[in-house]
Length: 549
Image (cartoon, rainbow, N blue to C red; front, top):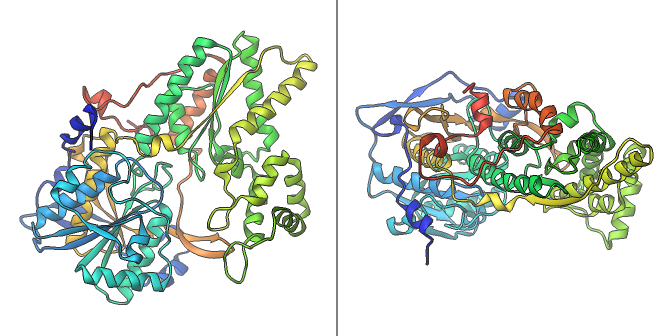
């Protein structure tokens, strides 16, 4: 395969490891833990893996050098750095014993169930070090939640002599890892399960997990593009650019990109919900910024919009929640089937409350139709398909036209639209993500060699130089609570939303009025892999603010 000059240079990069993982280690255990919510219910569901302590690795004189066979799965959407988790795990198990083997299950959890796999070799792994994407073995969204799947999985694990399985994924995938760890522990199958925190959305974090991998690289990639657009915007001075960014369940990406680029407007879904804002309130907020800049002679600007914004508008959130209920068959838990789109729309309108029907009918016809019809494989509304950036710009244009008639606005409003999603999911990992991911994988090998199961690999203190990072593990049950999913109560890892009283949002809030009226754009430029550490090795602004750095 032909390679670019950058690929060749990056292949030679040796990711940095914490000092704690550079030699033999032993486990330092903390106090017993409990789940973040619904403690009694979670304990009852996970009796074999609940209450375990947080662990930290500290230097030791020697460690277990027994050969171990390990399997690995990439689950869910792609995130930069996945290949380095695998290479870190590979190097980790080989450092314990050269006879250890690492197997990759193809195309996600389905590869485990269907017994499709590859064995990694030095030559195979070396082709993918420090590269973006998940193409080394592919990823998938098969949920591991049924006994038949678990039993099919144990067949291939026994055949290959695999004693531990590492699942790289987001909150849903690691919830599945937790369920699988409990099942294998209850059955005494002798297979450990370890999770790794992945998602560019940044919503898999807590007191123990500083950040999910891929978030740093994705945000830097998007911020480069936003900066390019802002430079163009400030050059032509005739368009408002409405930019939708990935992040359905939380607005971490939008907030981080705003901190890096200083746009005129950035909407934060969690704030919209907290303030009980209506769709018209959101439109008015943007239109006001447009009008104020027009009054200064600036008929241009940028607006950042989280992908899931519409789902956080309280009235629409209630509507979507009921749509998810009524369009799920209560007997099977599967999406209801309809003969035609018109039949489905009629069913929806006849089975939701008058309040929700009024909200549905207040929306533009095309958006209302999308809400009624477009479902994901689990029967939920596909919010990401709604072109929120175009919906908002259209509604802002209408409001500005009304204001112009009333003499409240005198300007020109031209628009351009963008959605940045796939552009950031498989970028070559930044130095931060390359190091962080390699450490997560290497650290997972030590959790396995120390007999841990139902744990997530965690690396902390990552605002410091890599040598000072802290390695260890956190019980996955510690992050779980009970939530309503597809018409039923289920144990899941609690998503981390933007905290409105947190340092990153507070800093943003202190600056946004200035950014809205004036042109204070920052142009981050492309990710740098070579050069001074202050350019190449920096973490996200979100993490730096959270850590007070």
